[in-house]
Amino acid sequence: MKKCQLTLLNFSAKFSEQMKSILPLLQNAKKASSQIALLSNEERTSLVLDIAQALLENEELIVQANKIDADKMEDTDPKKDRLMLDRERIAGSASDSKNVANLSDPIGIVQTERVLENNIQLQKIAVPLGVVGVIYESRPNVTVDVAVLALKSGNAVILRGGSDAEHSNKAIVKIIHEALKQHNLSPDIVQLLPTDRAFVKELLEAEKYVDIIIPRGSANLIQFVRENSKIPTIETGAGVCHTFVEKIADLEKARNIVSNAKLQRPSVCNSLDTIIVQEDICDSFLPMIIEAFEKKHVEIFADEKAYNVLQNAQYPHLHKATEEDFGREFLSFACSIKVVQSFVEAVNHIAQYSSKHSEAIVSEDKNLCERFLQEVDAAAVYSNASTRFTDGGVFGLGAEIGISTQKLHARGPFALEKLVTEKWVLRGDGQVRE
Image (cartoon, rainbow, N blue to C red; front, side):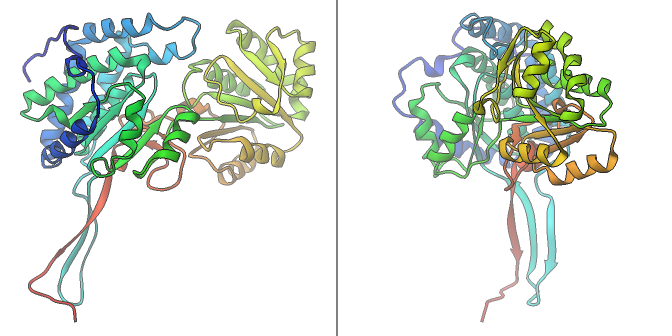
């Protein structure tokens, strides 16, 4: 691919005029979807690899655009970490894109094959979904992940990012459009919608042009899409994640797991929201997390038992928990603590408040760990490990659109192999049904 060097100037020209409707964009995406669907795996792989290279070649453009977005956000806003794109993160996105490019082709896989009694040859094969619409917030790296996953799986994609990342998203899509052009493909295959909220409802009602909608973000965003979409929807994003420290846990191991799950990157959906501690070890375990938590000024919303323990330990950022602090996705340096008397009470608490994203137990009782893994209903369940590992890249999927918390079509990291549907193909020789 010819080296692609772009500038910030005019990279948002498509939105330079006030747009009254996004319908033409959706129509164009539908028309262009056949181009990407008809490419061979080798051609789609080459395209994604070229996009990965173009990201590296134009990292300065992305950094400049991202700075415009970041400068509009307060440093104290926990979403700022999700927004930031530095050279290291751009390199990570390029690496993830290369991993996606080198995954096996999800299209054309024969899932079922047989000859019917009347000698019609029947196959069920994997085919692209068509036009995938993704609505997401704050994180511009999602723009890259979604685009390369869609292209590798033969789909066109409609991107509707948040206003927080508007300049970053436009810069990234401009780079992708240049790569599409150099492969003699229409840039309409990857469409970035304006951030005007009025257009979201128009997108959700465009069932004639969009085949699936995937919301990724807050619980409010997902609820809005669920309630207003006329298009089939797969929910991803909201994570209310628990870690249960059981009474015979290795407490040093538990401290490391809990600290990592809460502190390593609190603004992402697989970070820890609620620590559940068995009462037998409450007095000994909770003081162990104070030093690491205090360094990050973690606000703790504790139930009565945990509050008394931490108050005696003179933890400074302490609040009494209310009902609303359980089942709450914090996405910041904050968490809640629940003390329970038994394994059953812990599992029941998770069942009541979990978003079915990622849940963990820390215990040296292997049988109890296995019971937890079987009984807890979530997309990802862990024993003796941090919930921070729930990630398409970590799971060997290259990248992900998000973590699906529902059960139909996709659950867990929503990645390449789930961006297809199926088609029944029958080959006859004049057979008719009597």
